Image (tube, rainbow, N blue to C red; front, side, top):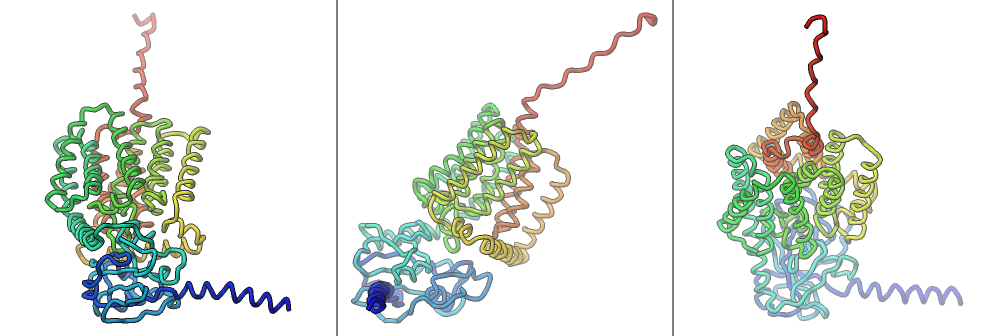
Length: 494
């Protein structure tokens, strides 16, 4: 009797879970079918893959398994299918997840497709922990939503979901188109100031980073507007050239604080900025390009201000770049730790106070990672050494494939590496050596070598020409040694 009762209780516990698992069918419909959708359920834009390319076959494999594999690596995600997919010519009447997918054949992964969850409790725009952008959904979110498990989609009210999605789609496209012009204009401004107005290089560089943030906050998307704003902010930065050296350090630290606050308030502000993530493999936080650019203020402000400010700035930078609710860039954390370790090792002896400061910084970083919520950084850490090793190997593969994707990219990446290697052999300044060491680690642990090289060369030009950071703060503050006095001649020789 006891066994029968236990079996009955087990069946009663399993049956509701099985019913919940099958509660929402997934239906693929033509894109035209969404014309009949008004304000029913919750709607969104679906990113069908990860990486530069996609296809219907790849999207279906990702849809069924709730996982993606970067298209550069070829193949489809491993694992068994979690959900079934059906097809229809029109929207179903019963509760369901309806979506459209890419046509057959390989094509660029730069378009988004409509998705809607037509079920009680869903209204307005879909929300996703994978993207943190209301209205934008990753294909990995569909299976958990169909099964009702962790990672499922939510929704947020919206007056006109269709209009909001149209504006979001346009904004993503226009910011993608603005990335290259904004980056090239920024680098041209840096080169010009390095030649003609060296003292203005650092504040102008801070202005460029703040311009990118301002464009993300305001949502301005036209290329000519973006470029104009960058030029105006850089010109405004030139006005700060006469600030004391400490003022430049505070300005650079302020840039880090501005990015931290912006990501804490609204993830879209940095995610949809011209230099932000691509929105086809990474959605929120910092891109490798932005992380490399922020390496300049992170190291330069510490070198300028010196003392206990080094620990405070290091903590600020590490939380900004690596915090799960902020930059969520695990590779960027290793890059920063390398830079600060080399900078401290070359400028000061490892005293007890230095070790205490380092321990405080690491505790702050650990708290930011642990308490800041879930992200791909915390997921990788939770997987243990094996998953970290697999992630590192995957990044190395992606980095190599991107570096060799064309002759032009290969020339940029390997030519840039050669230039940085020559500079490193000749460099003697601690700040620059710390920066070059950080770049070397970045090329190993991140998977966007072309962005790292471009931003890295620009950052080196800034740091090597700015007179206020040519030497660390400890050397600038150290008084010059007095001239030795000539000894008096012996009395007999007078």
